[in-house]
Image (cartoon, rainbow, N blue to C red; front, side):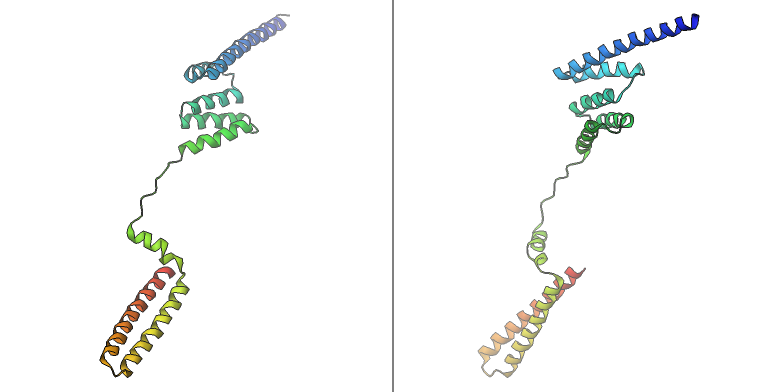
Length: 183
């Protein structure tokens, strides 16, 4: 008989304790709705200290910390909520958002003149296309030098020689760019 009285007293105390935690939980939810996140956190922590935890409690704590832009604490409590209830899709979704808060926004540095040239012009052709262009410049260099050699007039010789030298430099540049693109 004494055992049943003790059991009844223990169950009665637990229900009173659970009702007290439920009223704290509802009060914390009210603070959350009003935007008083720190007060809500304090009440949620009181419930947590009583060792009556649930996935909803940790989920709400995570939301409060998320609203206060404390990504590390938000992630911690969302993960605790998922440990208690892995099927809590709200906690899983909010965990994803909280993790995005931690990603550094790295601003891209402005590109230098040479980087812009490489991106806008050099990268437009593959190494095969640069190599084909080098072969074309090689034939052009040979042809212009041959015409220079055969020509009799000095004005034309000068023009053919200068253009053959320019074609030779274009050949060297296209070979270098072809090698650069290959590696």
